[in-house]
Length: 474
Ligand code: NAD
View 1 (cartoon, rainbow, N blue to C red):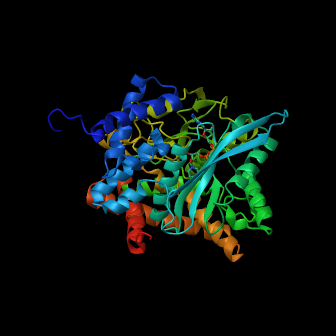
View 2 (view 1 turned 45 degrees about the vertical axis):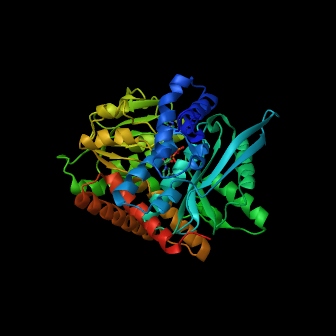
View 3 (view 1 turned 90 degrees about the vertical axis):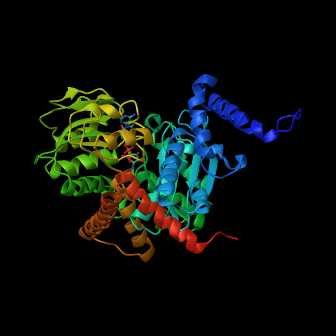
């Protein structure tokens, strides 16, 4: 700056951006400027980590989960010495759509929900990713989940990019008819983005086979004929695949078994604690129990149960089918929601929501293997603490990939009008997941990196290689 001259406008940018980030936090989260400061600094740090101008910040996506996903990518990119241009392209979603989902409630009132569909990457094929109905859904979370789907599909060598969608609503409080109206109207609003060759949704939190059937029906009505391949995780009667509803939990249990080939727990009946008892948590429990593990603790959104002698998993599955929650199950002590993470168990499976193991509680985690049934349950700060403690973390992009693998089989069956038997599906699922695990483990063992980094190096590397070969259009 020359003597007597005003400072250059650009020197005000960092301060202005910090102020903007604080204001965004204030508007979005109702936080005071002081409360918003740490997240705002984190956001700016993460955004400025790359050689880009202030106009490339894309704060639309910036929530905690997205920044975590982006930070994981940044760390892996640096380690791999990734081409800066490709890294920059992978940091943001390719496309995002925000829609209003107005529906008539059963009481006659009209309510509008926010819906999202994000496609992170389309390099390797159509994009693929679930749809969740949950009150916490927002653009940043959906974008993070879409990014993880990209790495997951590439890690498993599936010809897909990553996508995700969601509607911010309270599914537990809605009737079946209200849920149907949300599913159909949301599908109508995102219709231009989805299709068997473009983007193929699937179930996620608080969505299920029935909702997939409504999505398939709505899409097919617009197109004029049945298009089963537009969505996976459907009921068998409308083109679903055998083995899909159990695929994610089966894959979680299978990756834990693979980890035990490498890690000696010193027991024939390892103990397990599981957070979440929906599709992923309950099926993981079912298969782990069948494999001889002792499931001792489970929590869901309504409560938790603990029995150090082992929970009767088959009886619990029947109980939850009837009651909707694990709460109050026989012969169990009550377990507090947060207590599950500090239990003395061999294996911990977070299978509910993101960001539950953070720098605040990671030190208390005592398991030897942690398998991420959920997407993003461990924050990057917690990841480092768990690794330092010697806990083997099977990252979600591998541990919970069974769902997308069998979704890929379902999509193939739909396109080819074929029907595979279940034994074939289970065999192929285990083959692909076993291969993914072994490839990840080889990098983990040979490059002295943690398992998540190893898995991401594979996933990111494959997408980056394809991007390099395809070039940058135009
Ligand atoms: P789901 O709706 O079937 O079940 C969610 C479970 O989590 C329920 O038991 C619910 O009570 C519990 N839960 C919700 N909030 C909780 C909280 N705050 N504390 C404790 N428990 C809570 O959902 P799902 O399909 O099992 O998905 C669970 C996780 O697995 C999500 O992160 C999802 O993205 C991931 N995932 C799902 C699939 C799939 O095929 N369904 C595939 C890959 C990853």
